[in-house]
Length: 99
Image (spheres, rainbow, N blue to C red):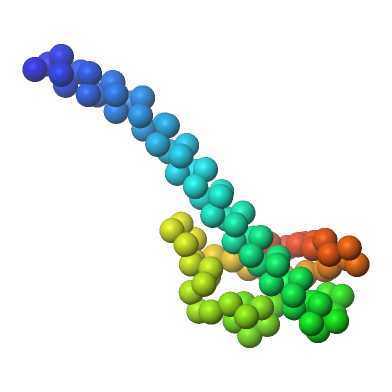
């Protein structure tokens, strides 16, 4: 019985860091996907409005997101803040301040 407990404990110690790494990768993937979606919405906003820069776009009124469209497994829409956005003529977006 002690041997079984020892083996299970060793497996737990080995598996926990691997599991945490997978969760961290999933968080980064979700954040990158949301940033890409936001960048696409900003490009569309700028092409429609003809503005070269927007200070602080509102997710729902300016960028057209629904109340919970950016909600994911790890991050909620309230976690994203976009400000001081500029867009160059080649479509590259610069995020000067983000959190």
